Amino acid sequence: MNTSAILITLSGPDKPGMVSALSEVVASHDGNWLESRMANLGGQFAGILRVEVIESRQEALLAALQALDSSALQVSLKAVEDGAVPPAGRELELELLGQDHPGIVRDISRVLSEAGVSVQAFDSWLEDASMAGGVLFHANALLSLPEGLTTEQLHERMQTLSDSLMVDIHLIEPEDG
Image (cartoon, one colour):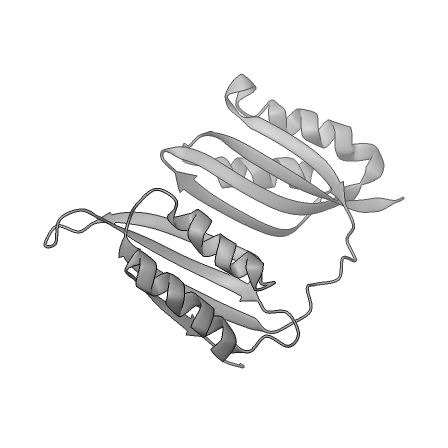
């Protein structure tokens, strides 16, 4: 029996029991849940998961996932190489806080891209700044630095961005543990 890894993306109205229902469908098709990221974004469930499943069961798995909530749940499935090589380089965490404005993610990601940095994970959210007025933008990211780029060099590039956007940016070396 040939198994392969597949990437499943899902989105639709959030309701209690979504993850439980997903895990039941995966297990009932003899799938092995390898990793996932899921969130409620604006009242919508959004998820991405990597599952290992017997190739002959992939179509049935997709049909079962699509039947979970009839047409309300959007599901896609894509075969992926299971032995993909992780990006080279050191990991670094980024924390950012500042006034929200259109284009803030574009500006941050442009500086990272120009430095050859790969974004491994990116979480962002807004928060009312009741005392100061306005809305604060928060972002946390896990970055993979290319060989030869030091934390200090990236900090200098990000500091220019920090000054122009009026945001606080912190680069944190992950603790070995």
